[in-house]
Length: 109
Image: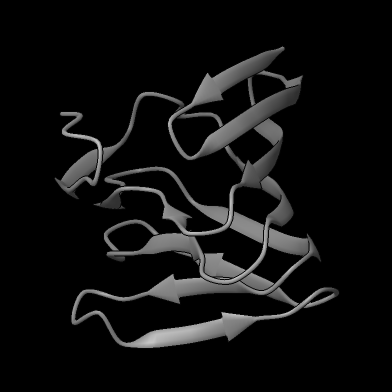
């Protein structure tokens, strides 16, 4: 199931009672909301492009193709694509609505 987002799209390719699998496509120059999860835990694997991950202080970590990044509950994070499109796989626990947005470039709550 593909869901269009202001930053690109997400393709939900696996959804069970225990885990969720998504492919995220982030357009160059865009980023997701600065957020955290109370229960959700996720691991991403970058397929294409260089993912920019911002932490709670907006310190940047670059994640290149073939590299992974793990997010634990309570960890503030924001994913972005600075200069080129980014495609990544995300596998997470099944808490799809567990998103607490802190900041959002598209005025979403």
